[in-house]
Amino acid sequence: MNPKVYKDAVNGKLRDRGMVKWKPFASIPEQHTGLHYIFENLNKVEKPILSEDQRNEINESLQEAVRSQKVALITYYKGGFIVKDKGVVSEVNTHRSTLVFVDEVFDLYVELPLSELLDVQVV
Image (cartoon, rainbow, N blue to C red):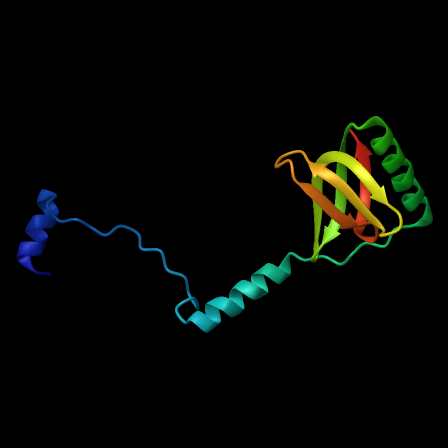
């Protein structure tokens, strides 16, 4: 070791870089993109199949949510993920088979197909 460097280290004048973070396999952009795609797809799940009883319970909960205009916890399937959202159900359009609700957090109108609906609970 260089004596000057050793002397500076002992006197506290030498500054270490500390721990340098390193991501293996992320040095090539193509690999980084591919790994990101793989890690994103690891968390995806298949869409659950609902029984007739579950669909009837959802239908009753939707009727209650529309009638009472209370906040409902809406669980639905979107792009491989199960999403839970709170909001006030404003409309159930049977002709277009869609559910429209106002998101509690962002006050946005969200329209989703009834086929993607997994559960509705009036809070």
